[in-house]
Amino acid sequence: MNRKRILLSALVLAVCSILVFGCKKSSNNVVAPSPTVGYIKIAEGYAAGAATKVEIYAVDSAFTGYNKLYIALFDSVNNTFVETAQVTLMPNMDMMSMSHSAPYENPASTSAVNKMFPCSVCFIMPSSGGTWTLAVTVQNLINSKNGVATITINVKDPSTARMFSFISPIDSGKYFVSFIPPVKPIVGINDFEVVVYKKHSMMMFPADSSLGISFIPTMPTMSHSSPNNVDPVHSGKGHYKGKVNFTMTGFWRLSTTFRSSMAVADSAHYFDITF
Image 1: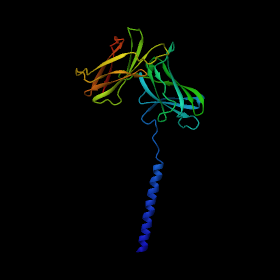
Image 2: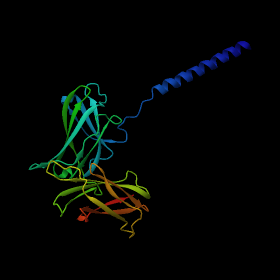
Image 3: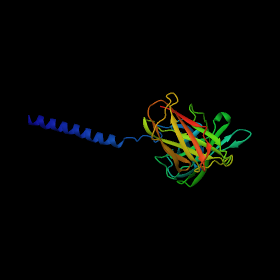
Image 4: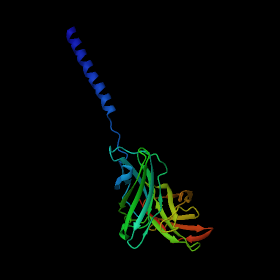
């Protein structure tokens, strides 16, 4: 009887050991999700001089308006992420008889954020008018090499417009305004954000911080507005941030007014949002 108990105890101990060490081994082999999960790859190319592959990601396909982009760099030899680099952008629209650029924001740091470099481009027209390319200059700080990847981007008009432009009667300047809608609109107080750029030339569209902005949200089908909205103010790099109160789900219109030195520069445009 004692011998049977000893054998049984030994068997139980062996099984427990297998389970414990097996669990530890499995936990050590857990693979972290790729940083590109949740994004779509909209284009890719090679910065040959930098020995770097360039992949461009976003949460949606490229559209007319402000696009938040995420650039992933890979060593072209071992295919590992390059996480330290100086990355600069230059968008270009080739219309055969002429070309022009668009507003953009370079990555703010030479260090990747979760292995990618956040940046943005505000495409001011769709690809139906020509060919958009994005030149991504990479100074690979790992191997001290430099290169440029010139990548074609297919840009479409979104189903609901997210950008408009106007010419101010005050200074004759042309302004481009893009709406950055809330990621997940809710009934209640939401962020209201627009970004404004002013055309200086065909190749220069710097961020603008000179305008005063007010807006009125309405539900055209219900003939009412909402209280407790906060007009956007400039927060940096042409971004103006405020608050909008959606009191119910449905179709909302955000009618905007832009002022320069208290004079109205534009009040004819709006953005629509449905949720």
